[in-house]
Length: 268
Image (cartoon, rainbow, N blue to C red):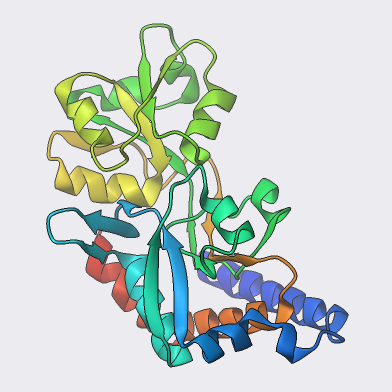
């Protein structure tokens, strides 16, 4: 089965699941949906961490956000005909922000996980990736496998509270795990020699090796894991989920998402 055909099959299955969910939730009143609340308010609140290139990045110097999912957030607000308000959040409080009604949607390279799905809804996935290492050019052959990395003399640096830390703690018993609060400066720690490598989503390693010539992504097209990205919304609001899924599906089919993705990732 070709990858393109498998992707189409996956998309059809996902859309069927959405339709099934709508059938189960068909008795819900439209007035109860956040979709109506956003339209009445005239503002879409999007939670984003601002520390994860190429998806979401907050430039402290300019006070502006940029990235794939920042542009998608603008597209979403335009489609709704409302203003966009970006709300800064962290990986550790990402779900809490939805549960506490601090924002309507969370966007920014967020992995779809069963543990998260237990508390919130996800849209259909828009990107497939997985965890892969990034290290200094001269160390690429040293860190090809989990077994090569999981050694007492290896220092793995991760940002706390997200799937990168979870992966490290689940897979490395011998390697030293170093927590670094800033996902913006974390790659510089490898360049400086304060850590040996980082495990993150493969698409991010491709961007970071371009930003830091000293670093190289390790088999980014054959990652250790399978991960899909989606956008988070409150659990139970089937009407809002249906609308977001249709908007995202349309963006992917018309080429809008691909154009935005290529703009930020390039030909990697």
